[in-house]
Amino acid sequence: MLHDSSSPRLLQQDAKLIQIVNAALADATLRAGEHLACRPGCTQCCHGAFAINPLDALRLRTAMAAMAESQPTQAVAIAARAHQFLAEFGPDFPGNPDTGILGTSPEEEAAFEEFANEAPCPALNPETGLCDLYEARPMTCRVFGPPVRMRPSTIGDQQEDSDATEDAREDDGFAVCELCFTTATPEETTAAEMTVPHAEEQAILDQMDPAAGDTIVAYCLTLPPNSQPAPTAA
Image 1 (cartoon, rainbow, N blue to C red):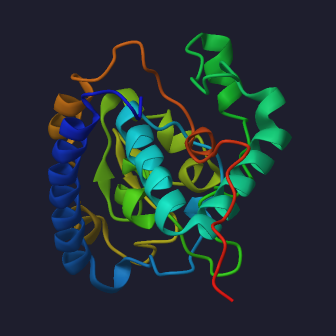
Image 2 (cartoon, rainbow, N blue to C red):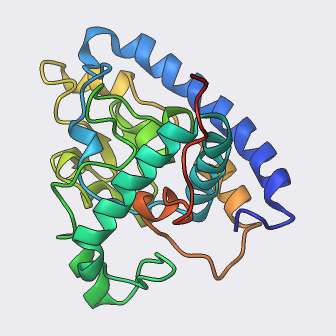
Image 3 (cartoon, one colour):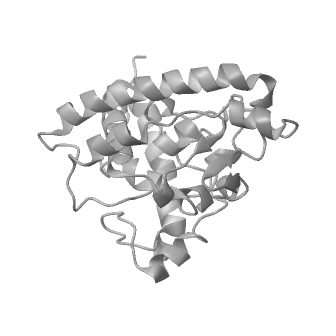
């Protein structure tokens, strides 16, 4: 996917999408005020596997390739955590373990609900408590926290794939992180809703390989076995 000739064009469109999302998040954060508890180092939503779409995967793989060139030591550390994740949980992965594509049968979808629910994301730096690929993080990560109205296809799916999202309060697709808005009135919560550009995201996904399916973060963060940090100057 990373070397597809359409990738540069898709990534340009994705950059515009991210600008829209960032602006929407900033606006929702302003309206939320003290009710939005998200802070650097709060990692509850960084635990538990969840499905990411092909655009998320392309963004992450592109970022990893760039990091392997510019920050090879950090890239290798992330990849090592991804390999560790797959070594531990890969045997129970409900999909194709070679491609990392999640299965879509009822049995596989049911199995995914119990898959790696307590595991930290490989992109999470255990020393800093921060995401090492924050600028390339999946859309689910970007919209988690403020009140959002999920697409019908994701209700009970992505929002239930990790312990953090299982506890989100949902009502007809209206989801709120359980750590946020704990003292807010229903009116205050509704007033802080973040507008998620589902249609804009879908327009990009529609241009991607229809055979590409959802995957998980760990499969996007591996590097070739012979990847090594560049030597540092003495």
